[in-house]
Length: 469
Image 1 (cartoon, rainbow, N blue to C red):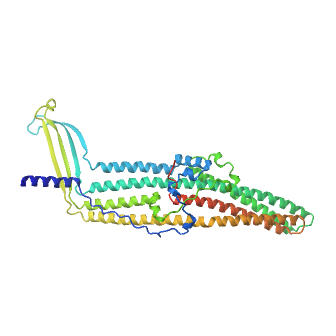
Image 2: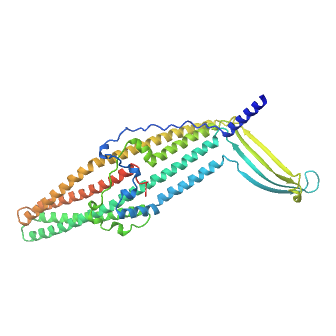
């Protein structure tokens, strides 16, 4: 009974040792260092059953077929996204390499040796052997290899999340780049109309100046305003070309002309984007791939501590082989040529000038860095959403006020033009009305563009852009 008990206990102890143990610290997700609610959360009201941004497919959020064509093109050709995908493949391969160390690598070997003089005389000696063997397989009693495997797995998962974050940023950048090109075309159309109006005013003022009705001050001021419009038009053309070049870089291909056809119709002609609720800051921990990637990096750093701790304990490796050995090749597989070797090795660290302790200190410092980076990613995400909500809370009123201002300035210009042609008002009054109208129209177009781009940013910062259909 006692012998059976001892045998069972030894078998259980051996099983526990072979199963290994983990020295990885217990992982606890750090508390989110942000308030429990967003400021201006009322700017993104949540209706019952309304889906979160992260669950809204980008095709359902960006419904314009021209923009959808551009996004499809970018997802196919963008080099940054291709690099992210390749990074995933590299991280997956690295994880598989690390995981393979948990298992013995079985190798077949064959060798033959002939030498003179022989070890036992002056003749020629021969030795032939064939076998299967395992070389220096580490028995992971203290979880060092398993910890490295867990760290590699977390790195792989972080790379996958980074690829999702890259796709989200790419889609948002393409949408905002497309809106910028459309906004440029709208500004060009406004400036072109202003140039025509100012040229007409310049001709009329020149005619009145030639007939002694208008002063040279009025004439020169009208000339200056006409040239100012031309300079603005040239500046906007340059900006338009630069924005199209930036969009082409995102696409990884030239911008298809059909995707910007009708851009001069104005941004107000675009279909509205659906409203998305902001939710709570805690939702970002689940919905934002960049935050999930930072947490996986933290998990990897935590696992590295386990590997560094295991380095203080003995490392056991096993080398073994089985096969046949013969002094004659013809008898290599004959009876009595069986050969085997069993060579376990244990290495106990005694003195290494503090290298193991320094490695552990480095792993602990890396874990603290990963915590700080994780917390910063949460804070950055909170700030991005808060900024977008601040824009949603104010852009509508600003746009409404500018539209009303533009209508008032347009009426003022029409009245000033009538008074000037009737000889009641001076040319300075007319040109001042033209300038105010031009400024308000450009400001309206700019705020309309920024308002649409803010909706894109809010969708992105809430984790939208990854889901597809």
